[in-house]
Length: 292
Image 1 (cartoon, rainbow, N blue to C red):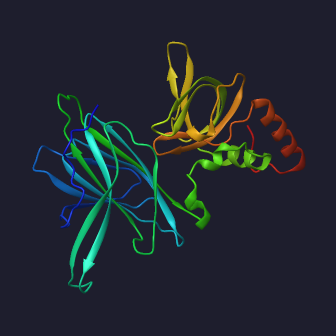
Image 2: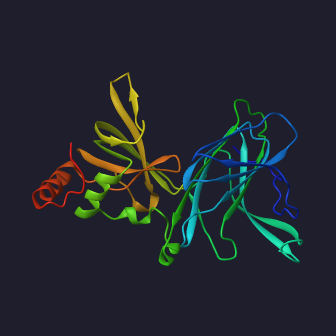
Image 3: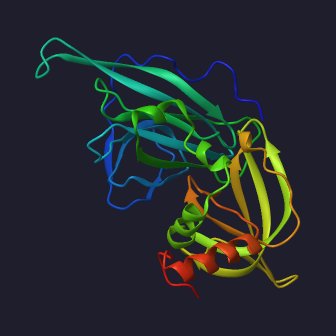
């Protein structure tokens, strides 16, 4: 779908006062009625979660601030259903004395979508210790159905040399035995199974790997879907497009984390390779967790 031309302001010179809502949990729900357009101010208290905005009408200002003492980056992705949404970074400027000076701001457009954005990361700075984002929606012509926007976010501490790399770039290289053990013991999901297909999405800079799960060793919540038709358990994993993921036959160990609403893969060795690493780790006492 094409985004309507001419809407969305690039500059916002006067800060609009709006209803402030602090997320008490990692996930936050905002529901709008069909009232006059306004601005909601959201300040999540977690380093990772999602903000679900139902019947969006007007603007949503999201302030992402970390408890890390070091530099951090705010990474996010936005899903839009039956509506267009533009995401901008907002920069607040105070003129005169801080206590009585006039505050204004300007917006720098970051992304615009009618479905899903790619993953976007913005580093903090000494001038702007928090990342302030402004989401504005616009109705689509001839569009029906429930309108909603989901904003997925994660805040990560970073080292100075990480600023040049994407958050998932290190996942492109194969995991060594120590990393395999760590992934097995600490991942959000650890399963065995087979690949059923691999698709590449250049616009999202992601590859999607569909898998059929033969055994769930561990998962946080219900991350995989049970299909009654063929009694199978399935799921989709994502990896950076630059990794060049290819379809492979055979049985694998899949590990990874829930990131921005998707299952991001970390280590995925052939099951036979993992069994050898596990055998060695159990023999020399380097296994870091219990094994079922």
